[in-house]
Image (cartoon, rainbow, N blue to C red; front, side, top):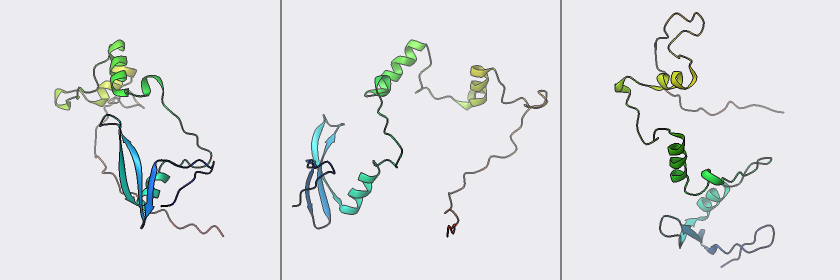
Length: 143
């Protein structure tokens, strides 16, 4: 077993073992009474998951506090209750004649059905475009 050290020199005590291209580490299962468990991953997958948490240069991590911190779902529900808003769990049924355009008009007073130029004609949906899969960016020669 090899011991890993962070750049500051403190040992990373969550890593249990590194052997044969596998990394064993401790993690906390928040869904199971915060119990500590051990997981084994291929080294490549461990590094991939680790690097997901590394921010690009110039970025700063933001931590959530208050109603956006722990127990966010319950706190947001309480905020909505105090503000007299309807529950977000209640799905809007478009068959009942209400859709996002009604909600925008209700909230802003601006109709998305009315032509924004002449203010007399009605906007009509002609076609709904399907999303396009992202393509590789073109090769740019920077020499």
